[in-house]
Image 1 (cartoon, rainbow, N blue to C red):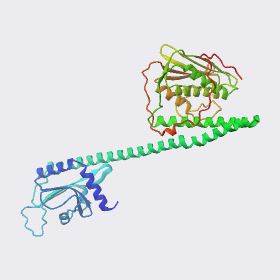
Image 2 (cartoon, rainbow, N blue to C red):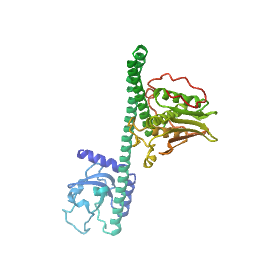
Image 3 (cartoon, helix red, strand yellow):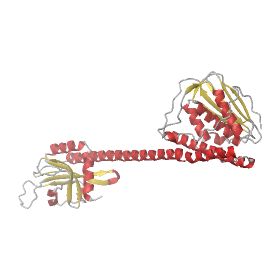
Length: 426
């Protein structure tokens, strides 16, 4: 930044301090001096930032105080208080036209010298009184304080603009993640569907089935990242609440879908919900799917997985249980944090977001989720969703609609009977 730009910025900074004109007026009235200014001193050049001029020196903010050159006070001297009083009886024709002058430095944060608060007159004045010097110093400190406050607000405003830009960049990233990654996945899944219908060789059909399974998994990972990003951007998990009468059917379809995907695992279920529940059914199915998938992944091989759902006087209660190595006690408090993974499990699939998203969905329903885990009794997750219709609605983050579309809508297995007591192992 060149010298003229420095001066323009300083003039603008002083101009934003509304108290400066009043302070200059008070200084003139208290001292009898007819010119006061906030000035910059560089070498022997004094440049005005703000002016009160009753001497008609024709100095404007940004202009030079040419009369100061004759006094010889330079930038080094301006860093200390200066008082100049000419003897009124002096008759030296070489004496300068300025017969009274006082200046104190303006020091802003970090000890930086901003400029000087000064006043002068062509008439002699008594300026050596302690109260005069003290007043100038107090006013200089007040100006410095205002400058620091304005500077602090500008930094905060700049940081806010930077944060907004970063948020916009994150939203663009989410849109790209949700749209540009889903399109090729959709093509892969559609191709797998076509091949599965045309191929007759069992080995080839198994390969196609694995391709479709991995596409579903990738789509699920994208869903998790989108939900996590929405929550961190402040929008929270979006809910579409309604009084749902078919909770049993909705949960049963999730169980059957996971059972078909993992036929070697045995899922024992007991769904007994005979009343309507105010909830977002899709999100509740997401919770059940995540908890059940987590149990299938980390449960003891060969041991069944249990899932139950019921209502009591206040809540819908969903429980998912599995046997296997317990979660360490020191990890229980971290299990719902993002990117957490069970250190005792050999599986490292996923991003560690599933349980965190479950907790966010439950919280959006104003519900509670808890876990108990011991070697003797296994691991059980318990979700409680209040049956009251007074539920907080989370605000949807304003993402592009196509960033939230599902990659595919695979036909789900036909819903079972309203009460499912157990599913036979394959």
